[in-house]
Length: 583
Image: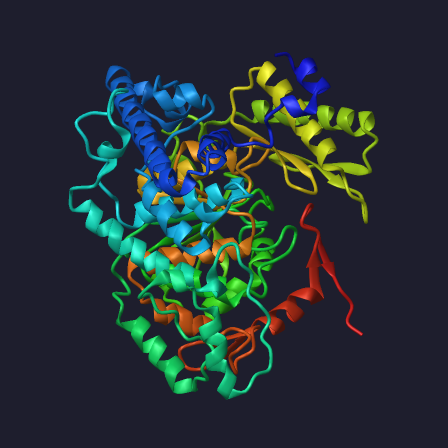
């Protein structure tokens, strides 16, 4: 289908759909219509699990053959572009690469135990619910790598149900993880789809009645943590002591490198990380226990560290008040401009540019990656930016956008004028138009054209390259890397990361917070440690929601951080610093 014919019918372009999730939803629709989801739902997810495992095995086999036949094929760029003749690929042509086995049946059972989706008679399982189940399966798989679904073979004639019955030791670990996550899902305050309810004044006598009314009777012996009972500071100190008993330098089970998008993942779109003590605490705990954290963001301010620090002001303040060790601080990175500017946190709690050239320089040490920035030619970069600027100007005029164009060293943006909005359809049109033009021009440098929600950008480079460079520079394999982001449709800038590591698709910072809590739970952090500490930082605690405490009891006041950062504002598009007059 030509670009012009696709343009005539907006709905024919599947740019706002995900092929795998849509296919799963259609398969589950049959059971729902027949009122059989309660009896066949788990087996359907078992079938998905088997098809994904078969696809993964064929991908690995095909890649190993290519790697053995030609050294030049031994990179992830080749892996992302090859066509694997699996059954899943035939059913979902757009399906990508899977780096781990996904225990989808167990994830479904855990999710269903909380939400009872198989009991519904009028509303079928939704896109977002399948997304949550996939996310849950992914973090379960990375925390405890399960053996692949056992069976004689994965041929078309195999019995789906028998093939998925676990008879090895992996099933015991699955059951253990299921209990852990069922307990976590029982807590409505940390559910990925249920927002916390505001607290209401109540006497000590009726608090117990409130707790009883919130218990889910379907959970059987699982006991809901009692969050609303008053606690004194000594209990919070005990929690900190419990945390200190965990092996602080031993790597916890789970991903060794977690990459995050910035906007709408760690903080709201266009905002800064200022007042999210729960998320800050979980990031702190991950760093403290050996995980490397990298913010891979489209925000490109070159190596002007103070501008990235402003966007992360509350998080960095939290690290400083908690006195995070130098060794842990140095495992925090930010990759600006998708993959162009690498910075690392230092012992002074400030970001510093990582050396590009010379011994140990990240540009030099990653040149073996075909698409890495160290192999780019400036003339080709200029060619891309010129084409993008011309295309954006055409889109701006054709659609009468109230927008302006800005050009940076490695990117071009189409951004709204002051107090104006650009329609989503107009941004999608601009992105799809430039994607097609660059594809037709056979540009051989990586690029990313994406709709940022309020704006559209084209960066030279993309998050596939950014994550791949970090994996190589830090020596962390793809199967131990996790990317968390909110833009996994093909007009989003997280989409490219799917080809180089496992991914988790969230929609806002609250979901990110829940995912990190689940990772910590599966890694062995006691549930009550997290639940009670969350309550101490929540609305029912004597500590304000805008405050946290360090190990010495000193307050980390996020409200004060926000007030200070508001004195100096920044245009998130251009990076221009704007001093705000006080009084």
